[in-house]
Amino acid sequence: MLDVKFIRENKDLVKERLGIRNFKEINLVDDIIELDNNRKKLQTDSDNTQSKINAASKAIGQLMAKGENKNAEIKKSEVASLKSSLEPIAEELKLTENKLNDLILRLPNLPSPQVPAGKSAEDNVVVREGGSKPQLPANAVPHWDLAKKYNLIDFELGNKITGSGFPVYINKGAKLQRALIQYFLDYNTAAGYKEFQPPIMVNEATAYGTGQLPDKEGQMYFVTEDKFYLIPTAEVPVTNIYRDEIVKESDLPIKMTAYTPCFRREAGSYGKDVRGLNRLHQFDKVEIVQLVHPQKSYNVLEEMVGHVEKLMQTLELPYRILKLCGGDMGFTSAQTYDFEVYSAAQQKWLEVSSVSNFESFQTNRMKIRFKDANNKTQLLHSLNGSSLALPRIVACLLENNQTESGINLPEALHSYFGGSSVV
RNA sequence: GGAGAAGUGCCGGAGUGGUUGAACGGGACUGACUCGAAAUCAGUUUUACGCCUCAACAGUGUAACGGGGGUUCGAAUCCCUCCUUCUCCGCCA
Image (cartoon, rainbow, N blue to C red):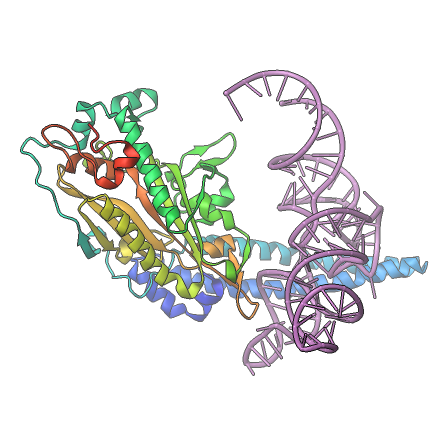
């Protein structure tokens, strides 16, 4: 979340930046400042009254110790009237704080100055492309047909067991999943990311920490009995590892990676782009997360993009990197690069990674801080990226490498998969 | 799931209603001593918000002893509730 002090001191900038996002409720900014003014006044009143109560209470103790019970009783009635005058103030203060907090949680992050204006995915900017689109055989088919033909993934079986969007991977299909996960994790840990295997259900505080709540309430699966959310990405439990921590500057940067299944309800998204592996309710992803010094976060963002790009290149898939425009960025992000791979049989680009700098938006919610050289406590910046999400990678690997006789694999995967072709 | 015990500062560990934001010990940091180090001595050692101030990591107020609520003039200390940990029993990968 944004810092109230920052909003107060940079009101016009905040409004202008939110405009880049096409944020509709710009008036929230003024409301927040007004509520905060109110809050300060109420807090001053409340503190002053409480101070008097504390002093009087102490005096009562001393009077009673001296045996001056009568005077103590007089003081007590004094406190009683102070308390009754405090009551409405305290109530209003609490109300104001809650309302202020609600409003601040509704403000998305400010886009960085580099973020292009724009309303939708159409306005994203292609930064660069890599790899080359393959020439497929004339009878080439999309991955869902390949998956069926070679018995790699059974979508209908998943329908029976759970529902749509929960595929069952079989035989070499299952092994390919395992190989990719292992490969991605090895690649990340080799670059200094520490591996974690976190819980895939989280509590409410954790979901608030990374910003899934309240923004994406309806997009997460919820276990009502225990009030746990199924994670939509490993970013959630992994970033929260450092919630409420103050780390040493010498411990920076903190680099973490994790493989987890991810669960997304995808409420409201129907249509053609949900076919096969294109959009699932459960999928596998390997995530990278960094917590870094605020002055370094944009360099780290580029570094992470480079990290994912190199990984992408070893998969030998045609890809492109997009700089997202203000209107297409996630709620919590200050700047995001998306990676897309070209699905040759479907003839369209599919998003496989999203690398973002959240600046202090998440760390302010989670109170992830460090002591700087002057021993002052400061918020860290958090970043994360997919490195990588599996399903669409698998879709492209299958489609782009299909031949008359089978499906080949890029060299990087040979040792992990135990062979040079899927079938 | 049943029975019992416990949750205090960076760590250990006191404290069962009134100068306890918190004894004592350890660790860490600063200074002195030393050529340097060890030892020793002195000091420092949480966070959030408010007020004051041009500003302050200067002063001052409020809050925080697992979370939330309650009793009381006053709570780390009493009560309720939730969470977590430990021990025993049960169940089980």
